[in-house]
Length: 247
Image 1 (spheres, rainbow, N blue to C red):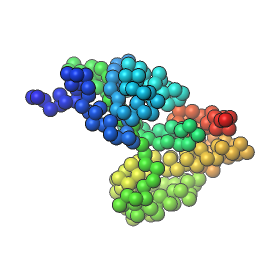
Image 2: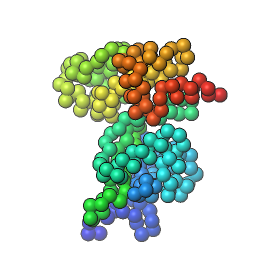
Image 3: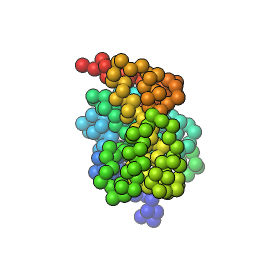
Image 4: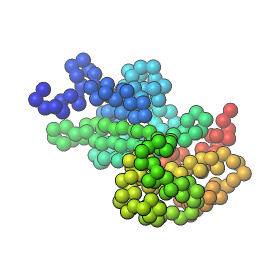
């Protein structure tokens, strides 16, 4: 093998070494898609979360065909932009909903694949879970006060420099530490805290959407709805209808 990058390509038997390597990563979805957004390689996490019995049931289909509802539509829209514009999509914070409406958080990263003529011919992507608990991280105590403050005051205007000061760090140092401990930036963590609270409040039919927006730190209904939809793929009203009408 003259070029070690050749191992990234399919083997003679059609298998993908990188796919095989990442089959053992239960908190990460790995995939390669062609120019039409169809899967040509997936790790086992993609198969399991799609509900497919075999990988072959996923290959050759788009995300919208594999994942029902807003997750598939949203992924398809990302694919179209990445393939059409040929631009990297980096660490996009996303929330999905489990069977009982519970929040599942991940960060999605997609890059276009190009041929020797520099034409876009597909994309490769990963979506990795954001850990629900970080207390066991060896550096957790360094950010604990700032995280507790965000949880207690998410409804107020919060500034990252002030949160960094609570951790005794510069803004850049705080961001690096947050990425190591929480796998997200301070701003992404704050969005997560606010929307986790919103999801819980939306289960109460007595609370108006505008009231929930203000309680979660958003200036108005519209700003809240835009952020909620950007992160989840659906509106707050649609989420409320789903959980309140669930059997």
